[in-house]
Image (cartoon, rainbow, N blue to C red):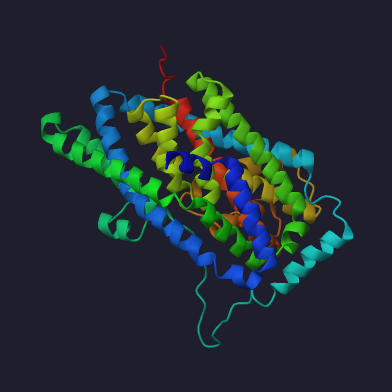
Length: 422
């Protein structure tokens, strides 16, 4: 079973299954479109494990941190590392996009394909409005709205609704409180939380056994729904973003190897399961058990630190989204032949970093919609291009999620003290 799991999660197996599914979706779109339910069930099964894993890991780790006396110091380092990683991802994405220049000098047939996609979406984008109802204007977000999006008024309702950020805030506050309780009183809770944590890891391994079949079904259904034409028309943007993602992934893994004191090959082996899961699920939260196992069991980082920092990094550090926002905005600027000044580029980096932090808990179309925020600050229209990004998002989401997961592992390795090797 262990050998089968290693084969199923190997990057070569993952990519082969994705290509096989894409071929199936192209050859039999009618049949492949019905396979999407397999992916939905699989992702829902993994999401089922996420919240219990977050709460048990964070509370248990915070209590251990308080016993070690390192909680206050580690959070200062977290803020610095998370900010530095987000800014670095934005700068590298901007530099890569300016060098590759996706969207510049497109051939006529590519521009015609892009225009056809936008035109085809024109009727579907219309909104029905009542003639006798006054539409309410959009209300700007207030401080109260921001606080309400983070603080759970009812933790059980937040758990039922799958509100990950609110569950994380509760776990942090509750973990701080439990850390103040004498160990003789909290030992029972510690054992219960550790049991939940181990059970979540076991469930994750069981659910991941049919990954090759699930990958084929998911990629087949996506190609059946979107077709290949959007990929051909947006080939420049997709290639640029994938290249930038590969560069950032290589830098992140190199940093992990340097912090762990191991060769690059050892890092590849340790990050194999988190990478495969990120590509398979397009959901970074479901990769947390694999991230903890790779950093602790194979790279020997301190478990108490890793179990606390992995949920924090997945929820707050969104380097994949930051890089995607920068690349997408520069691509739209090229389509509209908008020349950006150095001040515009600096503003783009700043807004993308802030929007990346705001993308916590978002995925798919919600993440794409944030490009409208960055375009708005630069005065670039985004509405017509929205459908183009939706069409190619199945491909970009894989790289975006993988970058977020591996980047989070690199951030955790940067915050944790280097492992002691004998």
